[in-house]
Image (cartoon, rainbow, N blue to C red; front, side):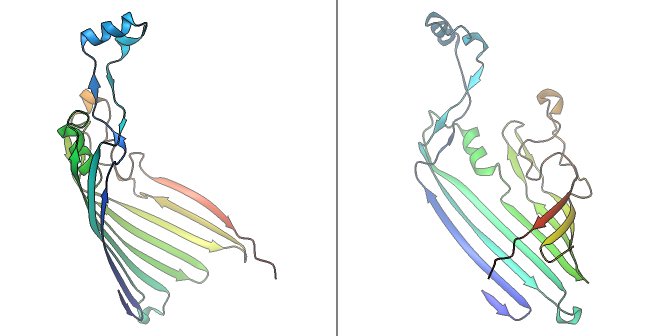
Length: 221
């Protein structure tokens, strides 16, 4: 940790081992004889059951990574502007698993479906009573087991402005992914039907704008 007046930096390393972790198994498909057996037992919809999966806790993982958080409030800007930077790198490894319920594809999904690297840079500025925020966020590559494809890193930009209309009420307007950046297109969309990866870390709905009112009750004396 570094605390040097207008500049602050924290760095945290973490390492987490989980035994009996709970997650969904791989996809299973019924064989013809299994379907016929279910029909004999009275499961009339067995022919409609193409794939199935269930929860298992028969595996272990190790997750380790690094978090960095830095802020700087330049004195020359009157202490009304703060620059921020956040960085995270996380790596997950499946250290033990039962091949009867987790195949290689499911193991890879557990390890790579979430971007291993993420960071954002932000500017917060006060103008009169206004509080303004601009934030650029980057997400590293991730793997989608449905598309069997590694999607490249991508980024979004968020904007927000807040104004205290009274001592207890603040009005906020903003936009998430304000410039409407679409994620990388699914290269096999025609076969799968989904235009974008369902694992996209910032969603696939484009820009989202909002208005929010916050009200706080002052504590009585």
